[in-house]
Length: 74
Image 1: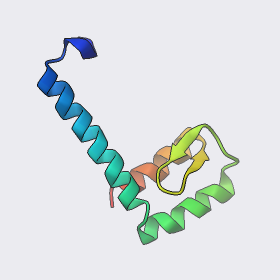
Image 2: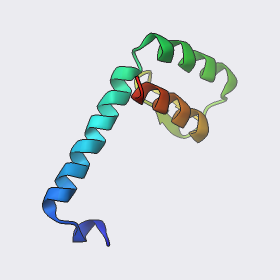
Image 3: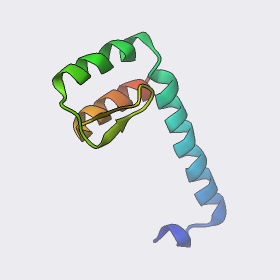
């Protein structure tokens, strides 16, 4: 099944859930734990193509996923 084959209400709900998740990552990036983890990852990561939500940093995909997942779980 392709994206275009999904019913419109399913596509709309999926968009809303993705937007909500991004909002959670951005809000979570302001927590104490995220503000401690992100600079640490910045010291061990030489940079990459993947965005870390909140501080506008770019890390290697694995480190960006770690930082974003931590923020989203707050």
